[in-house]
Length: 273
Image 1: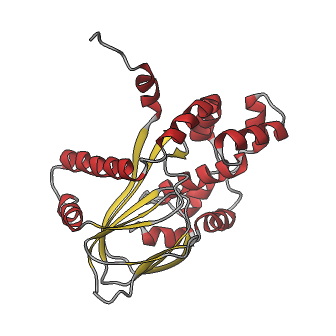
Image 2: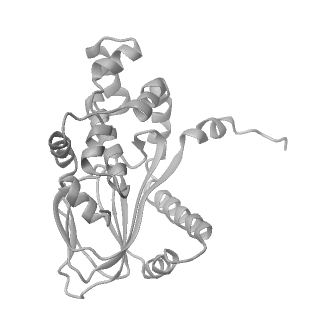
């Protein structure tokens, strides 16, 4: 059999990127309602009180998941969820994006939260995240995330593959927002860049991408803000200025509207000050 070069795999690979946004181990008591984040949250519990007094709830379906040791929980990006964690819950938290293009996560249409029993994985991650061999740790964490994606996305790959073709038409838009998008970015700017009138661009973008250009701008701005908030030593005022908000107040109001929590609480929830 002659060698066959899989051209489509090679051309699409540069756009397919796993981004680990946050990794942490510990405990953090919190109560958050309709919390939404631009990252997928993989939450693995290795100790609890045994009282079923901590939980994660899917804010859309109303399904409630008790927090129990030896289980993992998955909350997809941009999906609202309610959290109640008591101080005796100890966990490993991994936050990530698996993108086809910048700003377009493969789980963006995944519409529910998940709880699964996985005691061996919980124990492994507890030990792994403290391991001195960081290269081995990173490789194994990537493997765990990819295995999770294969498990959860098995029935959505055909749709995702079709979307890739449509998304290629907006590469220039995605690149601009990735490199230069901030609070001053408007739909009119993107429409002009794409060579279309506002209403035509908005209609086509929404049809092709499945989200309005205004929401796309807001989502990517939230993601940039989240990354900056997890950077030690950067103040909220500095973040507001870097993203071209008119004031810290307007930035904080925007962030709370997008995520359900103000910037300071977001930092506390993710172990960053």
